[in-house]
Amino acid sequence: MAAIFQAVLFMLAVLAAVAVAAKRLNLAPSILLVAAGVGMALVPGLPNIQLAPELVLLVFLPPLIYSAGVSMSWREFKYNLRPIGLLAFGCVVFTTCAVAVAAHYLLGFDWAVGFLLGAIVAPPDTVAPLAIARSLGLPRRLVVILEGEGLANDATALILYRFAVVAVTTGAFSPTHAAGTFGLIVVGEIIYGIAVGWLSLRLRKWAREPRVEITLSLMTPYLAFWVPEHLGGSGVLATVACGLYVSWNGPLLIPSGTRLQGIFFWDLIVYLIEGFVFLLTGLQARTLIEQTHGFSIRELAIAALWTTLIVIVARFVWVFPATYLPRWLIPKIRKHDPSPPWQYPFLLSFAGIRGVVSLAAALALPYVVASGAPFPHRDLILFIVFGVIVLTLVGQGLMLPAVVRALGLTRRGKEEHVEELRRELEARREALTAVTNRLDKAIADHEFPDALFDHLQVRNQGRRQVLPDNLGDDLSRVRQTAALKRELISAERTFIYQLLRDGKLTDEARRRIEYELDLEEASLANRYKDGGGWV
Image (cartoon, rainbow, N blue to C red; front, side, top):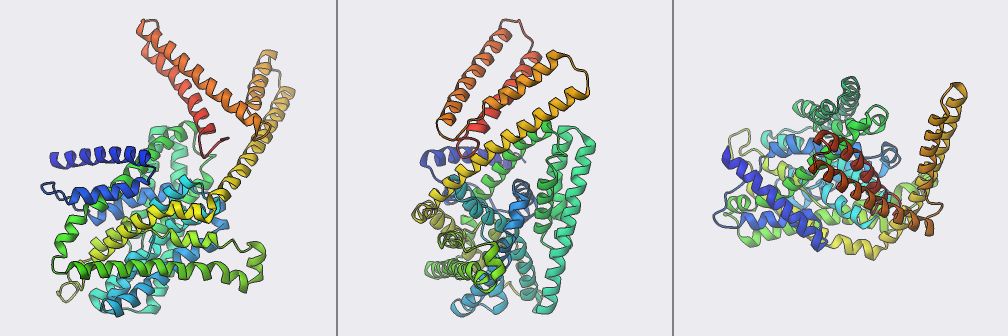
């Protein structure tokens, strides 16, 4: 037990150090974490840390999917459902088939084993490309499509994976039965996920205690994921549906205090899980090398390179026709959603980085088939999957910023951001007008002291005054005001702390004042930070 605790502490230290280095080098932390894990795995004398597939699929994956679902806009997800579906279902199936053909003719795999390898490497990772995409300021729709694909593609791949494992181990497979089962799983998981989301929100509304509500929120993704997974599904679609339901229906049911604490809690949870996932991925290098001693380096390299090339090319081959053919063939789609510039499908095609779900699926392969014979090509599959992950994550991940700049997508993203800020300011003005009208009605309907009316009017006027009239000089003035407010908050906090040291204030009183100052400072930081608010 002590050794496990020490290993976790050591990994936390590596995670923190890599995060600092990634910020200094302006690189995606996921890339450096995998590289650090590989480097640590090859150091003689360090303990060999093996990744349990159940840890990823049953412990790490549910909160990641749920958090992404809650963070996503249901309205944007619904609007982009067609491209998301074409990627999350169509592209995964197409890539699975392409890899199966290549594995059969180039690597000599049986068809069932080839389909199994294809199902494992077909789903792109959602964490690494999205982290890079958000930092580069991509157009909003591209981010939504990538995020939506990442939410659902694991479900398709894991269901295909289960079918392929059964086909390899038992030799039995019925396409008709598999298609019917697939449809039943999709419908059943969506209904179950919505039910779990509804139940979670009602329980949290009934509890009305932030710590209890956050505990319930942590339990929600596991309840949504584990039951379908145990019954033979993937659990992914149920968790996605649950997260989207909470995202759409939660704002008016979750109290502000819970929301403030929950944002910090989930940010930390997701940050730690993502860090551990990429670090553990790199740490599997030693185990995989030890298991592939029966193959030459040339054989391993060729197999990994060919498979990587196939998954990259297959995504390009699928994305471009899937983007333009429906619009060319169906006028209704073309009218409702005109064809995007070629840079959009190119970026979607290039962002197909593979991740830890593929590695967990490979590690979960059985060692023997139903007859007792060794599972065919198991060790080679493990190395191929690891190679595809490293090559796409490091290769495509490092090239992604340059590709985005070359495509001119950063400029488009900035233009969208300015328009988004304009709409935000307009919404704030309209909301304050509605509040003022509501205050006037309350004064007319009830007898209130003049002092109370004046106080509330000053509050509304103060909030209106911080809104810039435009995104030019007035915005610069508002930024300067915010910077001065932060200095004043800092001065007040320092003064309060001095009163505490002088014995003129209790710790409890200091904490209450400090909490109010922290909330005010956090609102300023959120409003004016890069990539959000009014910057």
